[in-house]
Image (cartoon, rainbow, N blue to C red; front, top):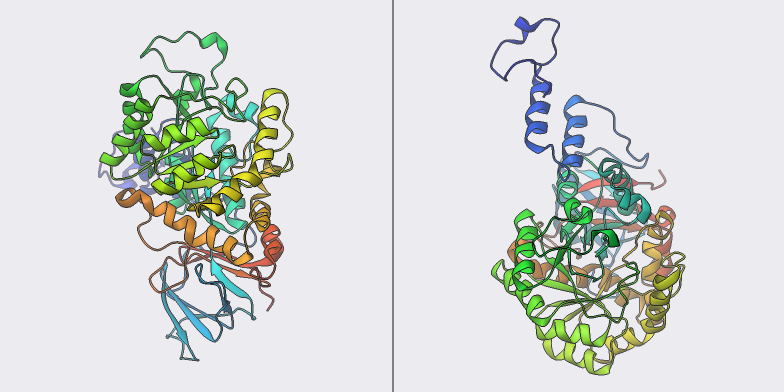
Length: 487
């Protein structure tokens, strides 16, 4: 693409006046030729910038990408992700991307180690959001439907950095063409959280996520794909065979788990929230494929019939469930089904809505308290997710959403849910786990995803709502992305 001739071992000197045979240009050409596709755009673009040495905006609070050989944290109180009481009198050593040791006393630092005095602040695991949409969180739906994928990926890269700066070092992405984006983050081309990708959300005709214009109807079985399907944002299925195909496609691309839409929702106006839009046989087909791949299916479901059908089909996790009743909660407890729910309380958490979407949102707000109380009554395995969509302003409330949980849980329980508990849910992906290792905890051998909080979130959970001020250090994978401690 950038070469005047085929790539050979021709000496650079023999091409005076032509840059195409410089090593960095040849590397760029090979990568773009291999990766230039709509879904691979962001990775190819970022690699291009990296190879050519083009400048990339980095937060003023960001530090060098390459970590020192070892980092020793001192003078902190520790919340380890599992136990409420803070521990003191410890030193924590990070080597590479792992926590090497946590020791008591005052042992000597390893030769060449960087010393970090935490000033008595609370050291804790990075936060995990179990329901996030990396590409869709901060952009208006009108922009997303316009389909300029280059702009969408660029805007998402800025939001990914903001997500990391809010202290969320890991997210479970539950719908969107995020595979290439994840690759770019993992390779250090753009700053952002670890991503557990689902790929396209898989929905039946008329289900939540079916955003086709009515002019695209009718569709013949096996007919042409809609725009939303071509971008990889959603997959519309009708029948067990078709859903089996689409699930396999997501797993083939690297999905760590599969997101299936069992019913209606809030942000899809023509899909009322009470609908059940997939048959049990269809959901079971998805579960069978995921089981063959040694991972799991999570199902978008609000109403009792939709949730119960998903449980009967063998799913391991339900997303939302704000309208569930006592019978449904008891079934989830009996089957050990996970609940991934969001503490939506008002339009502050969703942004202003109109028409059918507002009607559905009001039902969700009204059901939130009951759903959490049922989760506590039946001791459901409950994960935290924020599910911020279509607004930079609401995405900024990601930490604020955690503070809403104080209506039902202690501060220590909230912190545990957003770290160790969410990590347990991510671990259901088994060998499809893109980051095999310990997440959500501060212990020897765990990934070095750490926050230093200026204050004690076990006493004041509202510290999480202002991460810019209260998070002094943000480390992901042993790399320091923020350090605003006073000298």
